[in-house]
Amino acid sequence: MKHEKKKTIAPTAHRGGRVENIGPKKQLITWHQGRGGRNIRLKVNGTRESAEKILNKLREEFYAKVHKIRIDHDTTITDLADLVLDDYVSNNYKDLRGAKQHRKFWTELEPSRRADTIDADQLMAWSKEWRGGGLSPARVNRRMSFLLRGFQIACEREILPAKPRWTALKEAPPRSGTRSWEEFVAVRSALPAHAKIPVTIEFWLGTRAGETHALEWPQVRFHHRNETVEIRLKAIDTKTGEQRVAILGGDLYRVLADWHTFTRSAYPHAKTVCHYKGQPLRSIKTAWQTACVRVGLGVFLNPDGQEVGHRHYRGALIHDFRRTAVSNMEDAGISRKVAMSISGHRTDSIFRRYHIVKKSDLEKAGRLLLAHHEQEHGVASAPAPAPEKVFTKCSPIPQTPTNHPGSVRIRRTRKKR
Image (cartoon, rainbow, N blue to C red):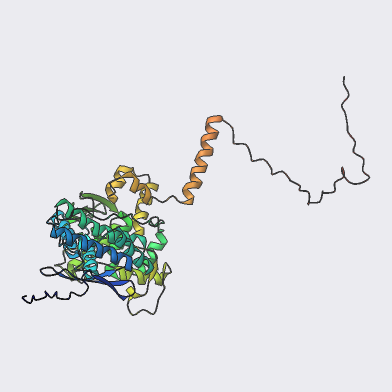
């Protein structure tokens, strides 16, 4: 008999794959798919159960590939983020800066994570982790919507078969409240010269910060004879993509005219209206927060922070002036169509949300209602009846001449004629 050699099978560590805990809510999936397969080492943020689900999905895909029915999708989170950013650039969307920030976040979180291993459980695990870290529901929804937009684009291009399901978290109601003229003057006086210009424009016209900072001098026309200024916003700079025009005098005219004279003499090559030493102004957030704290319209929760951004500011916002401008135009009797063309609101619902109803408006409505009642019926409204005294069993009965012990109550009757 010939001696038959026994076939030796090379040991394969973790043939079925394994899940290993590498930190708080962090798991490591390790699996060698065999000869010709890929070595998988995948980090997952979440519980062990969610990592086990991902591993089971990888097994199913591996065996489907053996039977030649598996379609390999190697799209990663980085690929999804790039798809969204390209979509922003191609369609010339306004918030490109925000899109770049979201892309940076996702590519730093898990850049090589395969998109088809992300399901609803993984999204919920991320959401709970971020909420536990103090992130607001609105910020969580914005992050998720950016990633899901990448899934949507990938599905439309048939790169991925489907996108995970996500239910948006309930957000806090939108901010309300306006700023008075006295508050505006106080904050503006505490601001540096370059920051007073965008604040003044936004108080009077209700423009958005991006629209204000993109304003250039050729878009501003002064009518010195009438002491008015005409401001034209380009369609490419507005959020709605529509050109807007506003003409106003008074405080806005005086501030912009003085700033224009100063700019022509000191920085003649400055193109933008809002500038700092001739360079385009991007943000006045630091100057605004410092001024509000100085005049008592805001506080720093951590005043010892090295930078203003680390001091956790709470208080008035520049965007409050947008609601202020809308309310002022409504109170001044400007037609809603004209007011919306100045502020840049496209729908009545959003415009009404920005119009804050004040207590004085309610009192005025009450006076108008009473005046209408008197005009219709010809009489003044009846006075409110006096409140009746209600006596309980525990309350003593007041002693009056009619119910005092020993008193006699006389009932008078009228004689019939």
